[in-house]
Image (tube, rainbow, N blue to C red; front, side, top):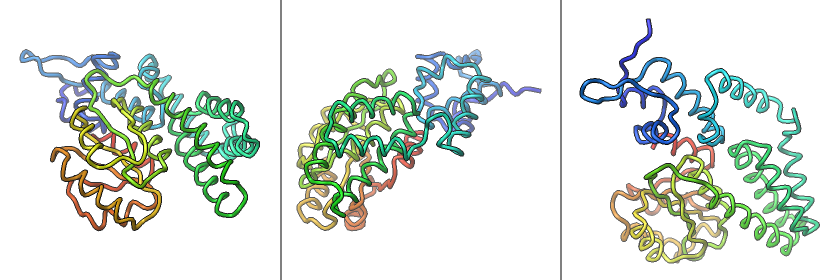
Length: 302
């Protein structure tokens, strides 16, 4: 016999979604229609729980809830099975991630802006957003860095690819539509940190989770980041620290940022050089998340 008596709190626990996301999905997309008690409390059925689980899996995989809400449960199951099959065999149906990265590298070496932009947008069209970020763009940025260190990629080529990728990521980020009254996320890099592509990818993960995202750019003093966070009432600040791992200026700016932010604002830091700074600061609102996949999981719980 079907249970039709799950409260919002229990539904959130069973589905991995927050009560906020549950309400946003219902209000904006009508993904489920829970029963109401006489006191107007929502009560979710087993069927509601199953559908919400399917939708969460699809959004964690990188698909927009605005697209997924129109699918019925069986269509969602088919889609999720296809994703699983493609992950088992990435070469199937032209989704070979290494091939996508090779195409990006080819256009980078040629320094062909239109070609690189076209390859990026085509990858975004054919792949889920999660696959694009986790399996194509993040590894490709590592490929560029390794190629530069090994002398296979020139500085001019690295700067070229950074400029084009930054432009495309900003376009994708500004095209994202947040949930109504969505919490705000701020992205930036602190003073002394010039590499912002990692934090742009993090911002895109947040945007795909339905959050409102504002990107400030690179190399900003902690005081300025804190002022923007207060003005925008940001719930979360995303930062990236790539190089170097022991810069006293960066450490001082992080400490100043934490001092000036509201006590309930979370600061999430990623990047290859982030861990040493966080080990020194040991602040309760400060968290290190290593990967975009880990960040996606974090936002699915918030």
